[in-house]
Image 1 (cartoon, helix red, strand yellow):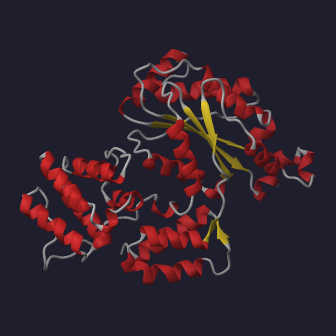
Image 2 (cartoon, rainbow, N blue to C red):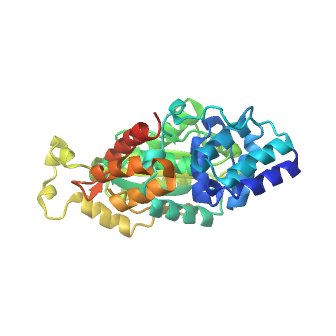
Image 3 (spheres, rainbow, N blue to C red):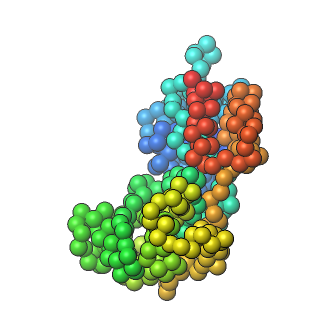
Length: 377
């Protein structure tokens, strides 16, 4: 496609309701094949984002056809979509949009996008992380991100949402820290985990690790993830484990000056559940009988935690909490085609009949089934 054709198509697409703003255009990306959507760079404005969508789709066989069909899922029958199809025909672009009399593209040949059911709420978390990323100018150092909540709030899915938001081309690497008794153990295990995942050996030097990170981040942002829980807090020094984690990354050599992509290091902290409290491990700690639970102590610590060390900056996100009905209704209005609202909304009301809030794990599973029954069959 010529630059002139791209610009004309972008102007026409910006008139489509599903591409009017960044929130709605992100819904289009979820309907594109992963090989296309994962290759689309992040744009700083909606116009730039739509331009990058068109440029990327035009590089793939049937890419423009996939884009038009994704837009049709939201904008079927609208005048702007008709004008887009007319422009495609006029410019003789490599696209085969739906013609009258042809069978409409059905969602039955697509599965529910894997992260769509988990994108309800979490807006505060995304905004705070986005602000931290915007202020993070020293790309020779990673940005640390502390995510915390009960396991049922699916912090792992939030990291996947961040991956999609950042247009990460490399799958996030989970770094195993195993059981650590103190900060020295934490450093040793983290170094071994990084060495194993990046270089396939357990004893790489710091310089080798840094060079491997630089190579991995050369094509775009990268994410590393580590999980800790209440047992780690109790066993290895309480708040010191977070200071030790930050110190490990601060003590690594900086990335080369040529590195200009974000390296995001996510620490997912999971609070123990009521079931875990009954575990023999916790019976060893008498202060569980106190009125203030250990979890509340940890949450109070997070409220004032400076998750930084030296030149390495960090951000502590709000606690991942259960979701309110209002937030799910707003999610439906934003992400589900209006044609399906009459089927989806009653199911949402049923979901919250006996609950004011629902955990992200239960909500994600329920929304996946609701979407499959109402929109994807």
